[in-house]
Image (cartoon, rainbow, N blue to C red; front, side):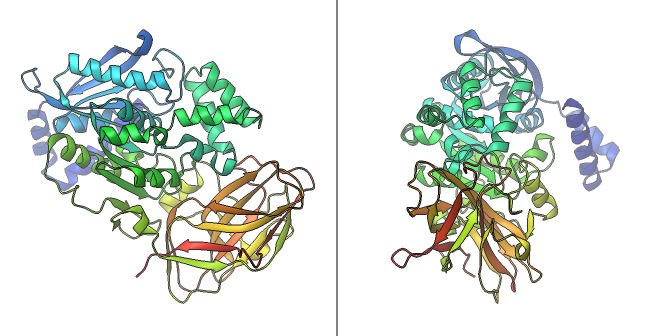
Length: 521
């Protein structure tokens, strides 16, 4: 990590020299400017647990002036130098920055609490330390983080009124809706998080039990697992967060396979203070990754502007911009909206008239991809997971297709499926996929989502409303949309008994449909 950081920063300096003064002159300019002061410290967290941290202060800070302070908890499994490049940039522009390794990881003490009460208490104690040991201004406190650090930042802001601005990037507001959406275990996401936790930290007994039950499908105490996740979700503490009224910026990627974007969008709509929502192409934390190496990055640029306005009072216009900023998965630029509801105000319903029955337990070939890989490839190479729609075996996949569209269809927001399911067993799982289908029948994945049911009466139909993961995707003119439903996907744990069947129908008194939000031209 240190070597990669050094190479990346060196590369950025070389690239910048090509655009500015001659290298010798630029080197002289840099030499004349003192660098921010960096020091590594130990901070006592909740219960005296040692948190390994680094502090970056503006060059020349001597205690005679006070500076806004930003606290950065590290991401899951990341070392304490994760934010060092960003901390230097922030210090250059007049911030004190304290980054610390979350408890239970690397050299910090304690056990992994998964953003539990001790992690929230740690954040407040780090703020206490910063106010006592750095030239930090107690009236100008901010928190930010990527992934795990984002989740802790939101929770801390709900419990500590000193926090006036937050930038929560690639995080979660609802932990259960993230890795257990549709009552379906997100297998690859949970396994990746669990494995990284065991490799780089010390999971506590509660996390070991929760993770073991989750991955083994031992859900006899599902209520306890959900309660555990709810306590660690900012949406549970929404009233306290709104009462505190900090300025909250949320950023995420359309294809985040750890914390899908839906839960952030829903949470954003419920915030009452100053707020901003940004979605970009990519997978978990890939939208922020280059910024962690000190390279130009849209997400971090927005975060800096957010803090500049709400902590330093800079009149940079960010408060006057449309607060919802979306970058589609095509090559288009950013689109601004006044709120999330406006993103998906134009809904088009497609009727799902035919009845389809499928055998469960067999992967049809329609899949959501591989965690942290498929959507990263889509981000950089525009190559989402694909499937040949005509070749999908209809015994294992139900398929509906629209007519070819005469004009481009710009999908924006959350696609919703309403259908009636009749199972032959009490438990079951299915996964819905939306594809962009070209003239040769090759489908590019637009979105997907799983759904699991338990203790239903075999043979008795029931209605299902399922939200697919939010996205921004442009379907070219002449292409079709295809809805595919099957019962197995490597991303998720399925609950289909051997030999079970699922039937999808459209009763006259409750027709099935697919509702697609399309951007109005």
